Image (cartoon, rainbow, N blue to C red):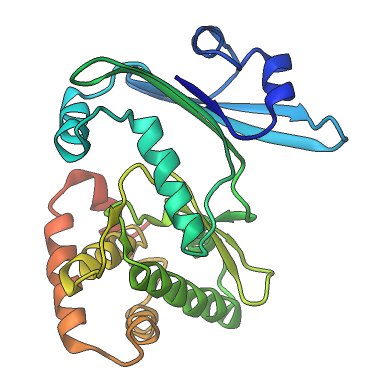
Length: 261
């Protein structure tokens, strides 16, 4: 199955209109995830003029457990590309911004996917929140972005959406906008519920916390963020975030949180 939402003529011109073409496509490699997935950057020109940057994510060796999970949840197999496609649509319906959806395709068997791909436009914003934290030391600018981000995450949760992948590298920021604007990327996992409880909120906030290293964000800024998010300094929420943070820091991939440099 292939779904093309926009730029069809351009994708046909680039040779990205069918599953076979996508599999054979070669371009600028951004990342290779141990042969399981790769990400390519594609710089092209819009028919009406002006540069257009696309990202192609291909899943070559999907985890079978993901297919089985979707089968149990939905009664049919959804690929990881379709999951991210639909999750981005859910964010958009809630008034949040995700990287522009261009196309996706999938080959699925009865129990799990065999191959899938997703094409998106480049995310809006000059840099990721992770980059902003490292590079911006202007107190007023940081406060504007932190306050706006706290309200954005609260808006997401109040809309019944939550994600364990709420990492600073998965959020782009346009710090020059008033208020600052954010764009979500890599949303392959998204919980959709009538109401997001305190533990799920804390899970997400802890993911954001551990991807904002201590050397980049002080305790005062973290507490202010939680106060803006909750509308007050909610001590139970602080406690839940702290407990989840301690749990996450046992994982090697989050050890950068404590590094001095």
